[in-house]
Length: 109
Image (cartoon, rainbow, N blue to C red; front, side, top):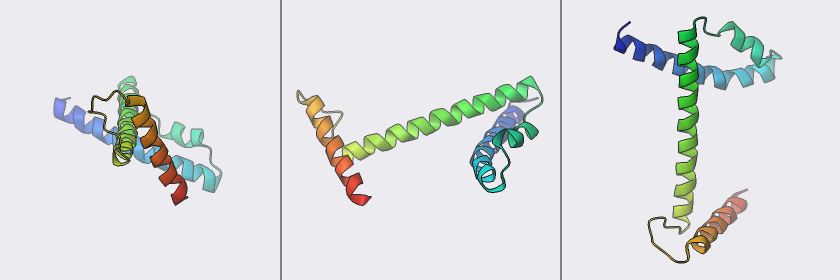
């Protein structure tokens, strides 16, 4: 198997895993089928496929965590926090930005 074929396979597995992880909870809620029944039918058969799927899941989890952290930082920056600034009032500035962000969030609910 060439490197290009391996990459295509990993991309296919990753997209399949993401699609399956978003569909399974919906199916489990609507049809009464448990999530373990659905995933066991589509589980990879070889160790290589299992490792590739696990790697894709870890990568997706890291990507989601990074996106969450980035979104949180942008939210704080939009409320006045400047992380690059060398400020002696560091904790207070961060806390003030968090208060503003939480106040805006509470007002929108």
